[in-house]
Length: 382
Image (tube, rainbow, N blue to C red; front, side):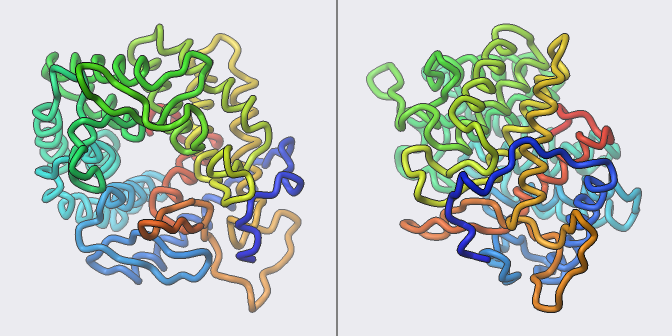
């Protein structure tokens, strides 16, 4: 099965959709899978598991991924209604508190997904308190000369981290700071979004994943639109800005989604367009699909975007990157890997090596997209 990690456009089927029962089956597999992962990590955070090995690399602090593990449990509780699931989410949430002080914009996904969802969905008081503290800390990192919150030096930012800007955390930063009761925090969110869209946007819908600030101006660090997940992160962030503020972000979201369809006409895209013989990154399609689903809600006739998102999610569920799903009712074989593993996340497991892995953030976004397609939740809740 691991040979399927190579990008192969001929094996993709872009036109297939899932019916309601099939989407529910896929969602149930992901929900059930969480029990196995939880039993493997106890009081640690699961970072990733290579392929379908079901052998997790754990972290005591969670790195930038920890919030997504909490988010999985907040979402599972939303799906199941289980108080036990909610208690697990709340416990994970409180273990995130040391991340308040790290010097990184990646605090935004940690606390938006790991804490704020608990406040939004369940009114969890401790999650609300943690959200408030994280907003204050992140807003304090705003750089008035750069007109943004820089990447920061921790969680991989390095020595130049405070001169870098990144699209990765655009969506959670916008949503997190916009939850504040302080209008100054709202202004930081809008200014940051404006800076990212101008600095990283190439004008044709393609986005650079980041830029470096020097001598009073930004210089993009990579070719626009080449890295699939970077393009998807930008799409998600723009769609969140469009929900809150309308134009020019609605048009920017539309152009970014159109670029995605032009540059990646079939699902299961390569990790990088300039290396089509390399690894795929289906997780990028999921993130892009959430942006498309949001766009569908914002346009007068957004049906085509909902259909496009559905096709991309269906291709992932039906692929070998998702285990245990049997569209035709075929039964699992004894030698099959455990069910509910989504191992379609291209992840840098060391300084010079990328692998296809199962991860908390990949599983969370796949569950989220399925919930939206099942009309259980709105796309802008993520």
